[in-house]
Image (cartoon, rainbow, N blue to C red; front, top):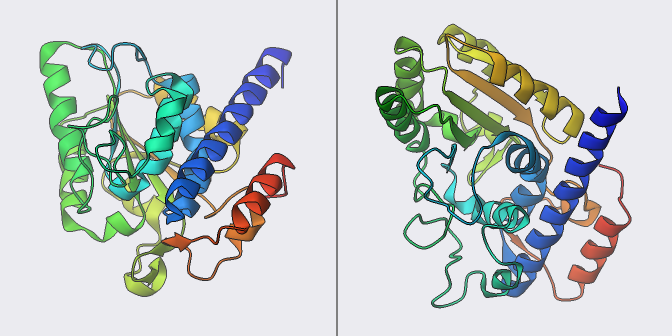
Length: 280
């Protein structure tokens, strides 16, 4: 790997750690939340916002921006951390997470927060909205790209696959789906709720350019995103295998990890483990 590439990876790795730190800070404000998912997708968001997306932090409504759609509204804590790292949200505003009158509600809502493109919540809507956006941008001759972060649990929804067929049918190469495969959803382990594997083969069968990587490996993510940026003629999907609580062993070991309650004395342990760069 060349020196510039090493510098690129190091810069994005540092950003991912800051995103994790911001997520822990917001989690401590409420004492609970979807903290494990935020730690798991931090690397993905660091690469997306720090290396791939074209946007203006000071102008979230810039018409030529790339659109980043968060289907999984309960991952808002992760998106806010990324937007703070990107400079769209002031760092000090993270203190208000989930509080009354805050612009940072616990589930992402476009009407409240700068940089949030859609209101997430009930799963299965993100890719359908992304499809419409991508079609509209192409009609306007706008070169902006649309990225949709969705979850493996969201693949249970039929509307997701309807949108996938539509994207392929229209040859929407300006859209990239990013699937967070952490093997867990609200009702339990994903494989036990509704088996979705083989995920890669399914997306390929639907006509997508599909890649699968370790979603907590910055170098692998950079390489995959670069390949997707050069791909033409079909929509792309990046399937990312992530680890809930990544970077904080205390939280990685939790049995009930979808929505976590973290005790007051545990937050400092979590911060220390993150700062020490504990093995992932």
